[in-house]
Image (cartoon, rainbow, N blue to C red):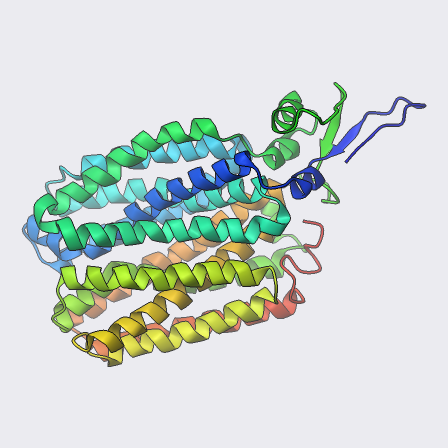
Length: 458
């Protein structure tokens, strides 16, 4: 890992990538996993609870479900803006400061939203909050991936993403058990106070070594951090740190992902995220309302069904993380989204009153959708080098958030037009097939390897 030419007095060099990959998983790696998982759980809770109680909020503000369309749209616009501007900031100033900023701002604005008095006020608060909570997933995954040995990287990221989905589960349990007692305002209070309290957790994990090396390979804080992890490592005072066989850090920063080395990969990743996150946003914000309005399924019953469905999503995520290290990831993700399309179509054909069949379709849909998105997140995170890693997954997510603006807007139109549920779900299944085709194409371009031939040194 380290080398020095004593006869010439050349500067000692230390390979941080090799050091991280050869370390056993210890208490620091576990602590980073736990804390990033908690942060992503809170992010998932705030991102998904709105859709589950949308009709209740509308009623509380004196309107109907259709009146909530601007709130949903503003939230998605904010999330798109945040996905483009916040991850590059994390690549510039660090992962931990940006996570702290996001927790502080979206927690405060979510708490404020509990006292919203109009749809316009709520739309503005959710729009601005969306800028900050949309960035936590890419930045958190970048920090975790850069702190974990390569052989456990996909699995650890998948565990964190299970916890992100766990926020969805937590909001479902709260709706099922406490909606009448807490009212819609109680969800915003919980969603605001807990992230503010969670700021303390960030004190217990270190900044990414990969980030520090790519910012300044002679930063003395790198040696200090390595010695804290392993006091037995011998480092000279003038050691220069580097990241394995990674190519020279591009002077263009995140814009390098549009250069010849990454261009085709970037275009395909952005396109498949547009369809994937667009579909997720549509169903997260409107599926409960579609079933409530067009199939007479109560919000509490839907929330209970989603609690069961969560275990499908958790299973899909863990299976994805385990298999990605063992087989061609592109063909695996392609298969997930073919199953996703079939499950979405089935949700429009099976009456919710046929509980066993409907819940089975819901579990399969969660397995395929959540697990498939986990695969996409892992691809977007691991396909770029550290100097653009947050930006890579963040900007891919940003294009996904553009889909998250367009698709829910179409959902609002379908709700206003009272389209049959069967037609809505049939049309919604089509993007899942488009995603499968795009992932397959990305696999061909990259030769079945994450990052592909062009990204082999990343």
